[in-house]
Image (cartoon, rainbow, N blue to C red; front, top):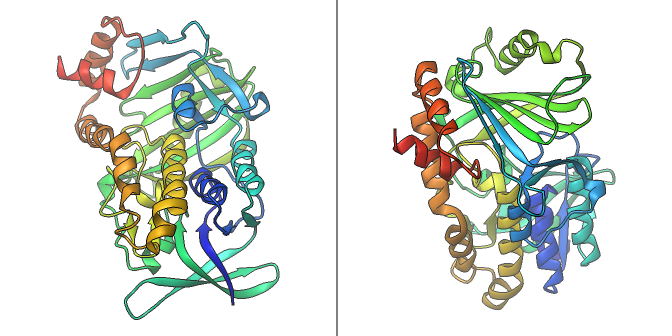
Length: 383
C-alpha cells in the first residue's frame, strides 16, 4: 500500500489550497479529484472580493478574471433600487472569476509545491482503525481500484461530503439550511457592466436572483431558493425561467451553459478537526449563510488547514488535539460573521415583498459606501 503524509479528497479551492500549504511545508501530499477536469463543471456564480483574495495571499493573473466589479445593484420586488459604486482608488472591488481556470491555477500551486495530483479518481470508502481513526482510503481511477494509506485525511469534497460521513461525522442539515440553485451562462444580454446585481423577494423564495457580468453581453444569471420552498412543479429552474422570461434585458439572450446544485446556509457545524481528519470549505459547512458565497471561505480554511498540518499536526501525530489550532484560526477570522449572517438569513426568509421594498428603499438612502452583509444587517436593525 502506498502511503502519504496527507491525502486531500477534492481539488476545489479548499482542497487545492490545503494541498498547497501542506506540500509547501514539506509534507508528502496526494490531491484527488473525482472529475476528469479540475474546475469543471462549475457550480458557482464565480464572484469574489479583492479584499478577500488578498487575505489569503492570492492576486490572480488577469487571464483568470472574466470581469472586474466596481459595485452592487440590489432590487426589491416592487422596483426599489440600491446602487452603490464601491470602487476605491484602485478602481476594483472584486472579480467574477473564470472558475474553470481559477481552480486549475490553485491546483497548480499545489503541484508546484510538490503535491501529487490525480484526476478522474473517485474516493470510494475510508477505512478506520479500532479507535475510529481513518487510516486508509479506497480510490478508483483510470488505473483501477487502489487502497492508499495516510497519516491525515482532508475532507474537501464539498457540499455532499461523503468523506466526512464515512469517518463518522454527522454532517446532516435542516432543510431550512439548504438552498437549491440553478444558473445559466447567457450571451446576448443587456446588463450594466461592472456591477453584480441581486433581486430579492418572491422571484426566488427564501433566496435571491443574481446577475454577475462576465464580459460584454455575457453573464451568469441564476438564483437559489430555500429547499423548503422547492417542489416538483416549482423548482429552482422554474423560478429562473420565469425571471428570465419576464425581464426584457434577456429577450435576445441565449443559454451557453446550465449548472445547478445545492449549498448549505448554516453557520458551520460541530468540530472540524478529529484524529487523522480535517474538514475544509463546504465539506465543513463553512460558507456564507446569507449569500451562499464560499470561494473565500474555501481558500481561507484550506490555507489554515495546510499550514497546521505541516506544523502542529506533523509534530503531534495528527491528533485532534495537536491540530486544534486550525479550528481556532478559522473561527477567529469568520465564526462571528457566520453567526451574524445566519441570523440575518433566518430573518430574511420570513420577510414578505412589502417588507423587502421598505428595506431596499431605506438602504438606498443610507449613503452606503460598501454593500456587505454587515452593512445591510446594520440598516435592517435600524428599521
